[in-house]
View 1 (cartoon, rainbow, N blue to C red):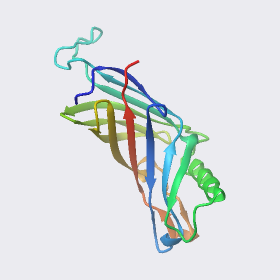
View 2 (spheres, rainbow, N blue to C red):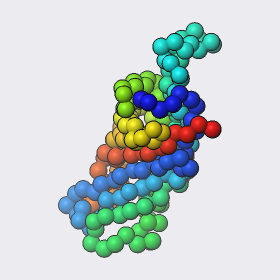
View 3 (cartoon, helix red, strand yellow):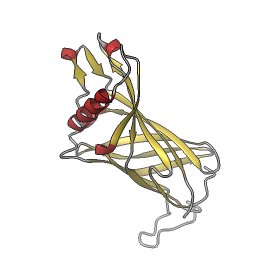
Length: 193
């Protein structure tokens, strides 16, 4: 990647973190596909100047790019609802917020966290492997990142809820349910300072 080496703080001030949730089931047409935004999150990106020659003085190993992100799950907000037999109302949004908090067990596990374990840089893209902790469970997760311009990165991953012990929401006796796979997209501007 051609992003300048440095230490970068990221969060809602520098980008967006979106979840795309899709409905399925025989009653899917009455529900909504949702775009949900994390409104409170923070992260750190470290891009050493030269990963081949920089050495960490504490460990004697070559410095490597790292990414960490922490998300306050209690601040997830529904930004858009498409489909359904009627438009998404404020009451619907509030009910979805309550359901998200229940499904994600935010009373016991208020945060999700990602810590990279390996970063591969390739021209204008990167693959970031790491550990994702949600609902108190940690599993490997891979992010695919593209460089959009000089300092803006976009990325995506798909999270399979059941892998983290999350039972996707269902209603109408299971006739309407959310797909187990949730698409996660993000855009961040890396600017030093």
